[in-house]
Each structure stands twice: as structure tokens, then as C-alpha cells.
Length: 167
Image: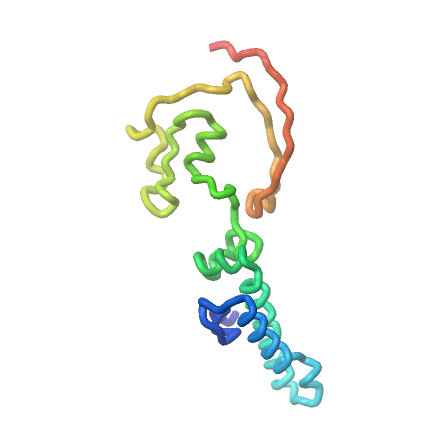
């Protein structure tokens, strides 16, 4: 499998290109490489035109979408592995540690170190801090598909009061 070229390189634009510049560059390439223009070409020319047309369309689909473009700019092609073609798990701007604290209540001792730093060093370690046990009488299950986890989703849940768990 051939290695992908940088989307900005494919369209021949600078990383600071405006949406209009990206659109214009894509239109020029789409006209140049559209398979209908190569009907009288050799098989090799037709294949090259088809590949170039698809490559330009893929680049445009990412760079024309502000969210996908921002993720591509930050993570490159790795954004595709996070889900949804430069997609990823969206916490709505919330820090992962805050997200987990909101779910589990208080300081639960998770320290992801920004995903690139200390890893999972905070599990039960000395930096865990005091444990706050909030919501012990509230339980629910939420089933999520892998796609929902990767792309994000909104689920409505209802909670019923349960008997307190005996200590």
C-alpha cells in the first residue's frame, strides 16, 4: 500500500490556506484529473487520473471541514485511527481527568498525564489524594458500541434510587 501524501501537498496549498483557496485548488485538480476527461487515454493514464482524482477528493473532504482539518493539523493521518477520518473521542473540551472525576465522583486517583506524559501512574499511587465517595447509591449501565465510543454520542439515561449498599 502506497504511503499517503500530505493533504496540503496533494492540493498544492499552504497550511495557512483559506477555505476559498482550498476549494479553488481542489476544483482545478478535480477538473484536471476527472476520469471523464481521460476516456481516450491509455489504461495507465486512466488509472493515474483516477488515483489522483480520488486523492484530491480525500484531501478536500478533510481540509474543507474545519473540525476534520483541525484534527488533521494536530494529529496528521493518526487522526483517522482515532475514528471518523480525523475524528476521535470528543469530551466536549473537558480534560480527561475532569471527565473521569465527574463520572466517578471527587478525586478518584486517575492521572493520565495528558496521555503523553506519565501514563497511568495515578492509579492508587501517592498522588491519588483523598477518595470522595459520592453517589454510592446511584448505579446505571450504559451500553455503547465501539463506534459510539470512538465518534462520541449523546445518550439519555434515567436513574432510579436504589437501596444503599451495606458496608
